[in-house]
Length: 159
Image (cartoon, rainbow, N blue to C red):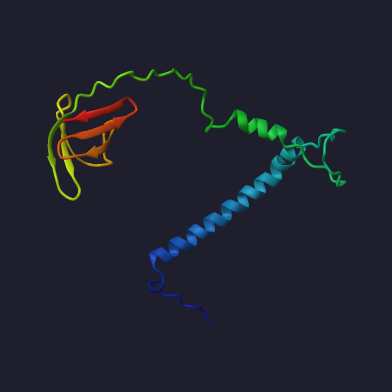
């Protein structure tokens, strides 16, 4: 008696999954077989040798020799692709005075006052509330007649 398999029961997705699984298993088998036959694992393990314990070290002798991984660590440090090269840092001098020339255009007075400030140099207009930032300045206070700005360069009052 022969078993009849209807190809309509299998989809291409199912066939692809089976073939991918078989190729993964075959690849894993091939890698382990080649590693065993080439002696690669034995060669790497022979490079890791135990180092004698110094007399003044505070280690406990468990009677088991531990492999020395220092040669492996130094090898990986030499070939580290994520190691950043040292960069010479140049000191950047801070500006003594701020050259931004801001101009108060108007104040919208309500429960939360809003100021309209213009920077003629960059042709930008800012609508700010108390606590907002304009370039390097923080809007410290908005009154009916003025706006007080504070920065690391000092205080500036716009009227």
